[in-house]
Length: 346
Image 1 (spheres, rainbow, N blue to C red):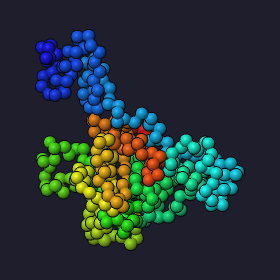
Image 2 (cartoon, rainbow, N blue to C red):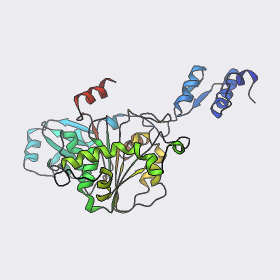
Image 3 (cartoon, helix red, strand yellow):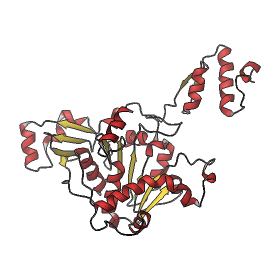
Image 4 (tube, rainbow, N blue to C red):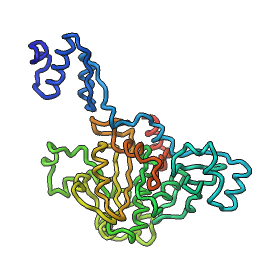
């Protein structure tokens, strides 16, 4: 039972307030009370009331270095340099103690200009930097991203980084470059604003309701179309052009329950998923399917997630070191100087 004093603290009889009232009663009886929740609003209320609160730790990433340290810069010894210069892939790199603790598919920049990735055979050079559907990498991080996106042996790619680093643009360009290899290209993003309480109030049918939240995808596709001489210009809308390229843009919820073999699936804004949702997404993929998971863990819209507990961080933490997985963390903004400074300062 909740005491009358505790009940009077809360005017609205919500479930959250009932939980807080019970916690207050237990605390007043001399019990040590800790409220465990991922609900940011509930934690703030608990703290104001003097109730100790903490996040659920089981699905949280404890070492954030796994997110931010996907790339290392090294200066090889003369022996190592000779091996790399001859193009040898089976070198002594894999046996070196300073590399042994780093996971498979970790990326290296050697002597400031040689880009390699750790594999079972040692350190292998990534593919040359050529335009991909009209889009060319502007920095080494983007080169690593395109290499992973275009490698058929890599079936799961995670791209993290702040706004303006080119994550979505590179993923879409690589998808278009490989469109003949897959039955369909699916681009999905969670619509956090479109809760059950608000979706029905928006005008139009389902496509018209979700269209404003998919506009960033079409903006990137427009950049790619204009960069590709074969597809530049034309009177058709970007949505019509995307359909001709076999690209289907969906709200993430629409993927649930489906079986999706031989698809290239891009999940944008993945930082707004939960670990459970991320598992549900990946288990939809059938034979021949490739997933590209994109997001910025510093821009989380969900009040129930943080940098350590969201589905994107959880994915990188659990999959790092697996041979079919590559994670690239992009840090250099390429959108504009203004966008770069805004991402750094605000």
